[in-house]
Length: 442
Image (cartoon, rainbow, N blue to C red; front, top):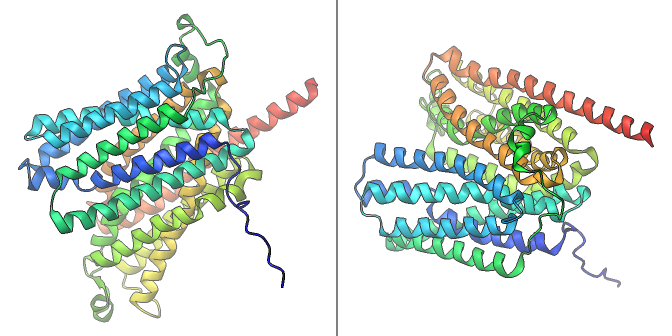
């Protein structure tokens, strides 16, 4: 009997620096998972701060993150700094932030820690994505971004799980911040030892040419930023509005048998919601690389157009599911069919997300001059701050309205995808014109 030898050909064929960076991001995100959901609980229940104080402190971190992204874009492209130095600075500041959390005894310590952590995170994202862009070819870039995103997701998930077990055993929250700080320290060492500077030796634009103004004046980039704000607003709805909608939907017309089986008049049970969103996260981690590889021949704009179509389908599905439950339209199978519908909707939204993440970063790299990759990626990263600023308040407002607006909100989101589709169609048409012009000039 002949056995085929085992090979690793199914893994992404990317430079070794990408694997090193992915390993570092996995390590760093494990530490982040230790504190992501537990920091607010610690500062309210252990330190004794109010929920309002904690919320304001977290908001200050978001503001620092915006400033950090702008600073990162400048440092990444600067000849006296570069991508590697910016990433090292990010890790050092983040570790210092965890030190503040460990020692914090009042609101001031929490604010200082969040300002430093926000600054560190803001410095991190443009720098790490610019390194990925620098060391990969256009053909490798989509899978490289997908690989690093998988590392982030797996690391974050492991961190949350391990921290949950740790707290159940010891209730020692401060040690979680210490472990997070150690993870940033190890990430610093890994980058210092194994990651070389990747900024291309291309003469950079001078300060007189106002590179920020030049980037923001790029028409194609402007169009992409508008679409990207919509995409990030959609992502925010999954994390903030959708769980609340499922938990408190207008389900008073449901049959008693269905209510007893796990769908209460106020919505899905907490246990069912936990399973639904765990399914969403696990599915994204599993399919991220295969989807990126499948979409590679399509090109980045086409991949984003597919993502837009999936967002429209997913939001339409949420609206239909909520409307059906509110009207007491219980399909055959009762709660099982309703649950399957929710699983299906979150599966579609998972596919929309994994189609979006690598392609959006790769498209920014395509649009940016090599000497301004850090700046372009920093501006693109600001879309996340804008989307997460718009998304939760908008969704919260919709859920506070009457039944028609609450369920119609999701159909409105589905219709808004047409704006994304129009912007991406313009970019696709423009890229086709550019290719034809280049061919005619040869």
